[in-house]
Image (tube, rainbow, N blue to C red; front, side):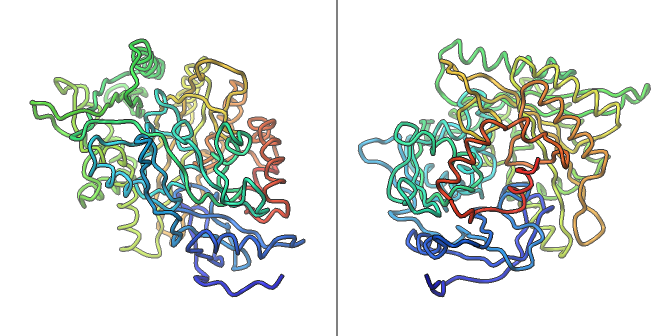
Length: 513
């Protein structure tokens, strides 16, 4: 079949959010469902199709939505100009707690719309990047601070529509795919990183919060990983025992520094318990990490926090603020609270625009461990950091409810009335370099990741695939974590994409390991 000339075609350099993967690829920008369908149809039965990757908001850390080191031979199918059919945000008249969103909708735009209504209705678990898109976060089954009580994003998804390269139902873009109508495809596409097809729209179940809502955050400090994890479990258990159904966020952040006199390493951390509610009669200060993401002062703080010594000072100052505040309660605007990572994103974009072509790399890897083994894994992680004198920019821990998505780090196989609880440990390293291009993490960090992979496998854990994914080259670490469900995913991919059109180096690398 002759391939018609397509509008909105250009060549451009595409970067991963973490800035380590990039390629100069041919960018295709379909504007509607028919143009996506025409694109896939042009490669039907092609015995040697080009490599295509689907890209939404570009917020994945590694090479998930990039053709790393491409020189123009591969294609990025971008949702940047896509506009869904019917309208972008559609509330259901007879089901007020359902909303259908086109794939290109950015979550901050949805929240802005939701806040014009009373009561405010939003998904129970919303990730922390307001510029991320519906299609992108669905492809990642994104994790959030609400995942310990409300589950990951997948628990809020009622259905979606999908165009696959095969164009066969239900991947014809016309058939709603849900956990009851097409469960195999539902649990493969959500968390499937866009490797099965192009999601055109998704329908979400919503929860109600008061129209004047702000985010209330209570912070408690801890001096060991074990007590940090216990505090989070206790908060989640109390919420469950009370039979609550309103969203509750539970997360933590920690750091390791040296005591002034003994120089002995000290673990310090804070547990954050947050909920939506009316402001109340008493004024409360805002928690600084959830401050105005559009404030240039916030950008400056985000930038300087990437420097080792200043990073430790900032962590210590926040720890002391939480420890000394009476009561330890803070109040923030809900948009700043939900999308607090936008401050980091905007800072990065501002400084990259100012200092081009310098790039500011982020390396984050997340290990998700069953709750029963979380404390031992967490203690071993801290021991390794101290033993090897590695100081991450970030050390975050939160809990999540397990789910059935095949490539989810929280996957569980057995039938259970209550999804099992799992702990997600994230190490982040943000170091700008004087060269124009970012450098890969130092050997000691990659060796640490490989060691933690081995321990995660031992304790029944997985890597969260939306972040960076470093596994031992030539080994079996990825297969040891995802083996059975990866095989099932590949079986479904063969049906949706029989010619292997959607692929890139990131996906190919995982299959080799």
